[in-house]
Image (cartoon, rainbow, N blue to C red; front, side, top):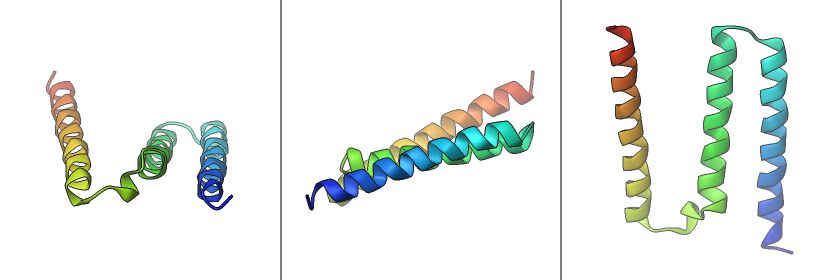
Length: 87
């Protein structure tokens, strides 16, 4: 039961964040809705990577590689925004 408790806690947190996403989509409109939804989605993704993909048990090199992947994704998204803004 000791190994299941953290998984159930994260699962409950993911369900709570799902409810928060639905609530934000009903209450907020426009840019605040987009910002809130992206922030909540990022938090959900971080929980899944950290707990279910067991990044918390990995060594330093694997964590650096995960951060590198996130950094690369941010670079690509930055170029996407730059391309969209200049058209």
